[in-house]
Length: 393
Image (cartoon, rainbow, N blue to C red; front, side, top):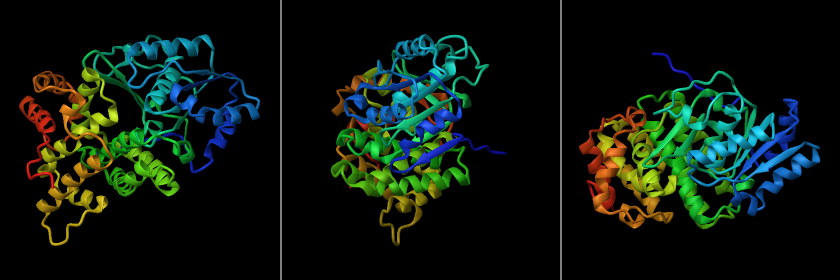
């Protein structure tokens, strides 16, 4: 069976790479640039760095900031109307994953009929007929990998859904670690575990390839060896640099190989209980891998090595279990709660979560081990009580 690999047309990375934005915009002869940025990155002064570059180049732009994390459909449709009202011919997204998701989808929908909901994976009925506007995506967190994927995620009433299409890929991704230097510890932790989840799920995906494996393993190594420092000593430039690079390579890996059970069960946590996406992934991460490791044991051995866990004289089974435990250690050590009850979820909520989780067939299909409704219910229960099959130590 043949495989394909896709990525943005151009990736510019490294400290100070935001300076390349004007030349990229000018290469498209754009005249009216719509910038999507959430209020947090504006207040942090990060967007001013972009504005300085656009102003110095004499480019006309408008900043739209009516954005929130985990955006519902109405936020997407309001942003779409704004880009139409401004009659933009170029889009820039700067911020966390939600800002980038909004930017990429409205850039495409500006030149296509309909609203955001018309193109959702699970319920949408329309197909894109135009590539849409050119776009640059600039992440300010090291987590989502949204700058190198074609995925835009939206929060629905009880779960989440996404739009996925190659037209949503950035024409250029600009990954400047300097933009992450002031990221608070909690967001650094949440985003970092999100990126780690992308990498480990891509590694064990049934759609993985040698190329996606190489990217995933590089990301696992960079993230696992730097996330604690980035969270608790955010001024460490080397840690921030490795987290930015690891997030991007994890994004390229999971975009092509796909994510699976962790994300499938995390979506209902975000939809029903509004738990931030990174924390939704983190609280489930070890319990999902505690279930699937026997079906992907050779990949678990590779993962253990990338995680840097000591497995000398261990057999494959013991090495895999050690890797699962290390995933939980990372979640614990960066300060994210590792049980569902810490997020206000009650045991009675598990049934509703399970019924919502089993509907994420697109994601569950990539798991090396299949899930029944009972399996999903069992994983939520494990995450509720904090129980790994072989103990947590």
